[in-house]
Amino acid sequence: MNHPRTAIRKYIQNLLIAKDIVGNKVFVNRTDSAMRSELPCINIFNVEEDNDIYEGDKHVVHQYERSYRLQIDCCSEQPNNIEGQEKIEDILDSISREVERAINDDYFLNKMLDSYTGETTDDGLAVGLHLIRTEFNSANDEEGIVAAQSMIWEILYLDNSFIDYKSDIFETYLMQIKKVGWNESTVDPNLIEAEGVL
Image (cartoon, rainbow, N blue to C red; front, side, top):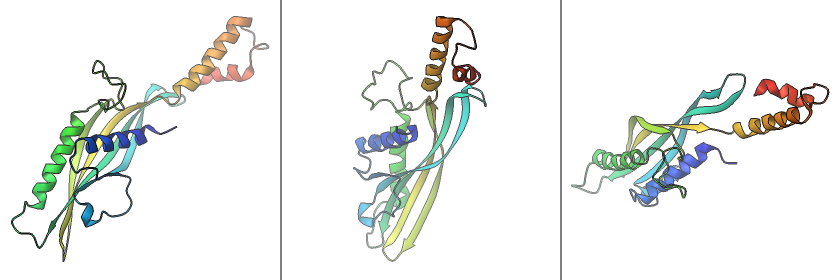
């Protein structure tokens, strides 16, 4: 079973490719440096994630609200041998602006899903998102300048991975009680113990 973070990264990759911002040069979890021939390009990385209990308590968590931070690097170059071209900062500003608009326009990360109808906002991969900050980096060598704007996004989503399991235990527990009546000698001890985790 894929983690929701995996689905979010892949969704954003497909979204940015569909918007044709840098063609199909949108990479996820890339570990090697981009070749100059691949620039401009976009790289997507994990940063960190915080979890808050959304349903349940610290002893028995039924559902988390996860705050996932994602880094999107917009990368480009400015060769030394080309005169009069747009400054690299302006190029990166333009790319990052298109990225920002594409993601903000799909706030719940649901418009590209097969199940999207436009009538609800609770069927997406996220319950909200926003851009936290943008960082700037550059390096200069004999060929020119290579630079990146790193956009840090916070994406909120609900993780229901424990709900179905606990619901199954609870339903089995109730069925036994209804069938035989409350009697610890006739009810599965594991289910009696499970009462404390529901």
